[in-house]
Image (cartoon, rainbow, N blue to C red; front, side, top):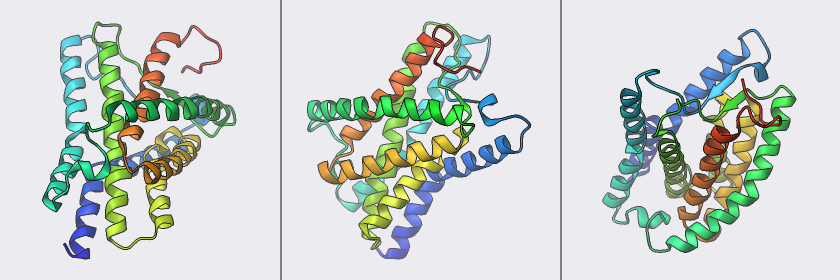
Length: 250
């Protein structure tokens, strides 16, 4: 394919996925900055109810949101198949499940505690909103939906922002450093709705993930790490919010 087609394809994939999320996060952040009150007095809810008081309708919306959130991943898989390689080219397959999970668990353990500490400092310093990982009703499907949401986030972000984007930028002639910066800034940008802390923290995480991807040649461990981080955040908040003093709540 020509560079023009590759460039157009990449922009379109981002426009229907995390590029659009980055623009939305920027608009949300501007709204938070211009709203009366400090950032830490405002809340950013990650998993909320779509139909309060109507649990079955709410469940339908939750599953619909999770399923449609994976469509860009299917699109990327289709585009890579047309290229003749498929998702295996970026290391998103079932060839090394235990290795991917083990590496992912180690990465999650290393990043998790540092990320939590950074968030608490950023919020206390006034650079971050209060992040509410979940605000779902107490129904039977709450924890399964939180786990599915975490997995969907991890697959979407790592496949597109690391595997696909780095491959396409390399084909477009970008230098490794420029591609690393682009991927990391994009990751930080669509977390900007959380505040400056969310932007900086996720950008640093993006740098680490790009370096690990280049070392391992697989997004599988990154998907596992991201999923474990989000599951811990979502389920942990649901279990601990209001019960421990160090965990900020709205």
